[in-house]
Image (cartoon, rainbow, N blue to C red; front, side, top):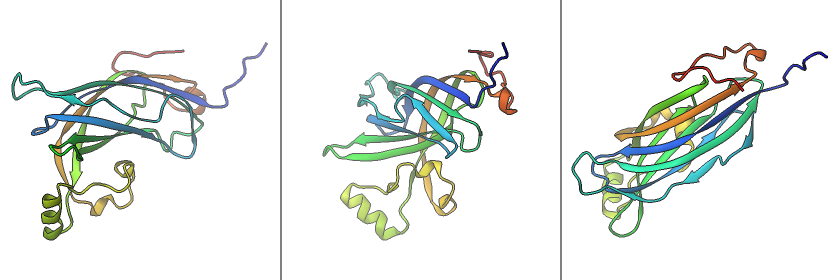
Length: 196
């Protein structure tokens, strides 16, 4: 009996958004979203979510904002164009109970099977004028993106001014299946090749 050839390849990702290091931020929560190209189909797992609020302990200046928030998603595709990206949005709760953006970040999911830890640079947009900066400071509402998926888009980013705010750490486990059938290398990740 002949073996059927696969009609798509599969990418399975599990892991967690571990922590963030944002100087001057003592409590925060993280929203995440996964975006992908038109050739990709979402099969399983949430494509967006929101973590619990975490607080730094008073143990010292090098304390992190720890979430250990799970991420688990499965996709299928016949084309690598539009490879899925993970977008992070970190918000602090200020003294008046308002959600204030502390950083956006975006990474592509790893393209090889294995275990990965990724450092995600975080940044926030700057106001376009000095007047807007003053108004934002008085109102306690700094500039933020109107579309939270903007960090994953290429269009319009070249004119966006941003300020680095820190970084987040994401641990991911990736399993791929049938990529070689479509001419893609099933490269080995940091923990070795995983075959299903």
